[in-house]
Length: 317
Image 1 (cartoon, helix red, strand yellow):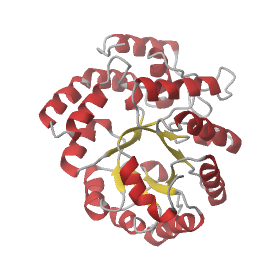
Image 2 (cartoon, helix red, strand yellow):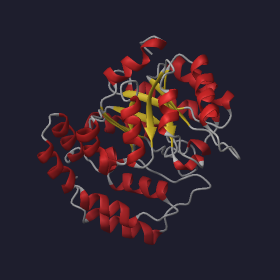
Image 3 (cartoon, one colour):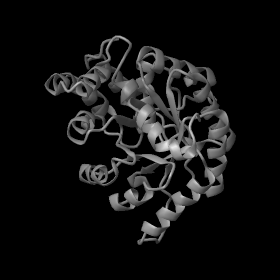
Image 4 (tube, rainbow, N blue to C red):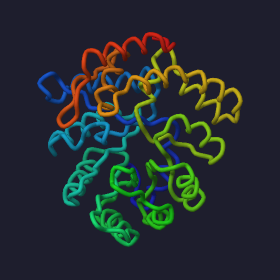
């Protein structure tokens, strides 16, 4: 951190711009973390793909299948590799608030830029506004680092825009990854877009959100390193065209990626999203590896179908 707690919002608005990607965690055949592979992926993403920042140890990174020490190690590797080259936002999400705080203090100690905290599971709780506000206030009172909210259907509910806007008043709340219908994140942008950076993970909507909602940040998912190669950076290209106000050109570039999106979408088994993402990485020359339980790995037939779609999608290697 090179900002004070009360500067978190302004610092994020200044430094969080463009495309940030959510990292998958590569595992070795014995299911240990592939440290060297993770470092190689990060270097490729920054050096060759120009990714501006990384979201580390999130759900796509299988944080729930890792020990506390493994999560800390992934975070430390990312901060080391990104230092001076890309930003970091580390997922410290956990249902146990003491674990959240321990990971948050680790993020502060190693020099991470920001952290992100998933909305907690709230079993049997239907009036959630005060619960959620006090949860994030509790964390803000104890951490100085900038904190992003994170709302996704996996929690069993969606945080309401009005609740998020109230939480946005807390001093070091600076962003939200808001995986909700577009009407909800558009409403939150109108309510609190002057206080926090609002973003969602759906790449297909990124250009429209720049044009129609004035967004500056894609935070985050795997498309930045699954739709692009060192020789084919159409996501970067349409993003910069949109930032320059050249929206018609940007749309043409964005739409040209539809065969790649379709190849991913049409071959991804419903119960194996992480394994599919890792295998797609391997086809791109990145390090993927197996998944940990309870997730399932691809069958050879599923790999064959994915490889055939990959080879025909028009992505330039």
